[in-house]
Structures are given as C-alpha cells and as structure tokens.
Image (cartoon, rainbow, N blue to C red; front, top):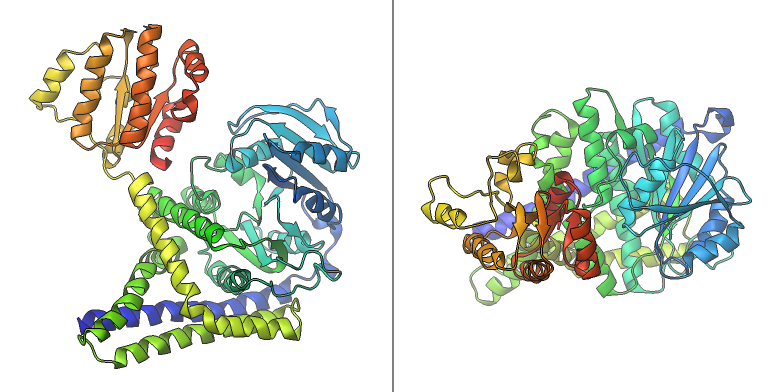
Length: 590
C-alpha cells in the first residue's frame, strides 16, 4: 500500500515539475520573441494579406463591442468575414445595423462542404463581409469562411473575443521571420469585470469572483506561458479557438475543420502536424506571447464544469482517433514530446492525483500508512502553489496589465488554488474522459464470423441483407477491415421494403444487440422503394435504436425517403449522411 502511495506522490510532484520546466523554457521563447518581433522596424507592405473569420451564433449581447474593436485593428490588407450561423436572436440584425451592409452577388465556392450559404453582405467599410448561412455548428461556420478566403492567412477568432489593436501584427510576425511557420496562436487573457473600465484593454483588473480569478492564473500558466514552451519544441497541439492564425492554403489542403470533432481546435492542429509530416515539408507551429486577446471566462462552477468536460472529451477523442498516426513518425516532436505529455499529464495524471488526494487521508485514518504521508501531500500542494507564483511573476515581468493591488490578489489566490480548484479540474477532466469512454469511445469493429450458423440462418430469412464482402454495405468503405476496431455494423437495405419486413429487420438488429454492438449505420442507397407504413415503422425502430444502442446514422437515402424523414421530424434524432466518410465520422464522434 505504501509503495502505491509513494508512487502516486512522486508522480504528482513530477507532473508539477514538468510545468516548472515549461516555465523555464517559456522564458527562453518569450525572450526570443521580444528580440525578433520588432514592429517599428517592419514595413507595412511586408505583412501578408489576412482574413479574420468570426463565427456567430446567438451573439447579440457581445457582437456589437466586438465589431468596434475590429474596426480599430491596425493591419494593412485586412478583410473581416463575420459568419452568422443561423442565429435565432438579433445577431444578424445587429450586424446589418452596425456595418450598414448591402447584399452582394459574390460567388460561393464550397471547396470544403458546408451548410447552405443564404446571402452575403458587404459593409460600407469595404473590409467587412457578413455571411448568413444555415446552422451547422462552429466548425462548419469556420469552413464557410475558409471557402470565402482569398488571403494568404486566416485568423480564427471567437465572437466574444476582443483583439488588441496591434495584436494582429504581432501574431503575424513569425510568418515574416520564418517561412516554415504554418500556424500561430496568441495569448488569451480573462477580461471579466475589466471590459467597462476606461483603461481597458491596456490594463486589466482581477475579476471580482473567485472562480474567474482562478481561471486568470490557469490561463497565464497553461496558455500564455506553457504553450510557448511547447512551441519552442515544435510540439504544440493546441491553438486556442479564441485567437489563432493559419496559412489559408494549408487549411484548404486538409479540408478545414472537422465538424464531427468535439475539440475542433486540437483536432485541426493535429491534422496540420500530420499533413506537413506526410508531405515531408519542414514546418513550425508558433505561439506568440506578445499577441494578446481578451475573452470572458465562465462565472459559475456549472458552466466551468461543462466547459472543462467538453475540452477533455475533445482531447481524448482526438488522441484516440489519431493515436496510431503518431507512430508513423516516431522521431517527430509531436510523438516524442506531445503524445507522452498529453497522455501522462492530461489524461492519466488527473486520475492518479484524485486517487492520492482521497487515499492518503483515508488510509491514514485507518492507520494503514504513516501520518508523514499527509505532510508529504501538503508539501506537494505548496510546491504547486509556488510554481503558480513563479508563472505569475513571469507574466508580471513581461507584461503590465495588472496594478499592484491586483497582482497581490492574484498571488494570494494562487496560494489556495492547489488546495481545491486543482482537484476540481482533475475531477472534471476525469468526468470528461469517462463520458467519452461511455458515449463516444468506439472500441472494436465487428462483422459476424463467416461460419456463424446463427447469423447465416438469420440472413437467409431476410429480404434485408448485411453483406460485408460485396461491393455494397461495408465494402463501400475504403477499407472496411480498418473498422474492426469500431463497434460499427452497416446494414444495407435493398429492393423493396414493406411493413412485413420490419419484424425480420428487427430480428437482425436484435442479433447484433445480443453481441453488444452499439453503433449502426443503416444504408438506404440501394433501396428502390419503401411503403409509407414501413417507413413509419422504420423511423420508430430507428428512434428506439438511438435511445438504446447509442445512435444510428442513415446513409445516403433517396431524396423521397430523406424528405419523408425530415417531415417526420426524425432528423433531430437520426443523422442523415450523404457518404460513408461522413457516416463513419458521425458514428465515431457521436
């Protein structure tokens, strides 16, 4: 028992020490930036053309101030594309009023497939375009902006993020000084309770609420300093969706954001790494400490819990989806540094730290271990608090956003952070990992054994068929054997389908249910006709599968069938896909 406790304590201290090493590397990275990135010596004509992409969904409360900050940005050859993702509030009306827009006939070339673009407007300030499209989510919205971009670089910014006037020039500097740079991220600072101050954005104050102040410390530590360390190693896997710049050509080459991913920012950068490694072209991912943006942090534990669980699901799903690709490039920085770091200290570490914080007091009370281990645990927490202070002192040295009183408040808050907030974060990360394992994680593909007599007898009775070896069904996937790791069964319906076939179809589904297979793709592509009664019963069964088996995807139905599905309002529960690629992604990512 003591050996396990010692291991847990050592592991926890090592995890904290890795952050300390990152802070030291961060100093080197930030000092290099201060020497190399000198705006006063840079000719404005050298700056590449750039489009800012801002996805908006129900942002009526924040978009007005965001527009005013965008109008003050100092950057030559700039275009701002604001994409309204089918907002249900007054977002589009506010955009029209603030920018005095008029409709233009601009050809939209959907190189990356997206939801339908309804209209495109131009503002009286010609730098601004407003795009109105059908709702498709953040990734789909950004892809629409990428399709419309004709610039060398694109900057992706959240609608509630405010960019400092000179930050765009600063974040572009790595592209000017190093041709290998394909993406760059900026610093993200918390603006809660600072936005209405006269001296904002040149100065910030510590938020009134403790939960927001704790996030200020966390952002300084994990985003503004630590990512500069990973950038120095060219091992950064995350550029925050709040503020990041990419080469437009690279985004188009990899088909933009993955709309099925739960963590589109992490997933995008991971694919950029693998794309550059695949084409064997030297590249770098930069992080620019001096380029500041400001965002709102959650102000309730409920919102923060939801955010952190979502981030963790995105991390675990991305690592799992691309896991084997890392080993194709064993000596690449993302394999040598990123993969071990994120697995050991972002996925496994929360579990071990929670176990230790719970086990040591309990085992001490039960007199199974010595009281000294409680003191060792307290010392490790104090060590973590000192590292927090070190990160803060670094930030205070390199920036001047906080006054003396606010600095003292942040330092005092950093002393208590390791004693409850850190554990909460670990708990939320653990919940996110568990949610992914339960709802999204897809373990092993399966097709019935060729010699399975029960399967063969079921199949022989059916007018529906499952045929993994034909050119239809699973055979239409590029390599269906690669799906053996996924709980995916593709059932293809062919010919005509009547109400009398439902019972047989349900028997087949139940057969797979007994095998505990959860994910089903129902292919209707070869279905020549279906009776209205059969369609109604099929919808009911599909809804049942959605509830009991974790989800069903309807693949590439005929227009008539698709229309009837929509009329039945089943689309909210049953995902309709047009091709196998989207169907498989929908099944994998949930």
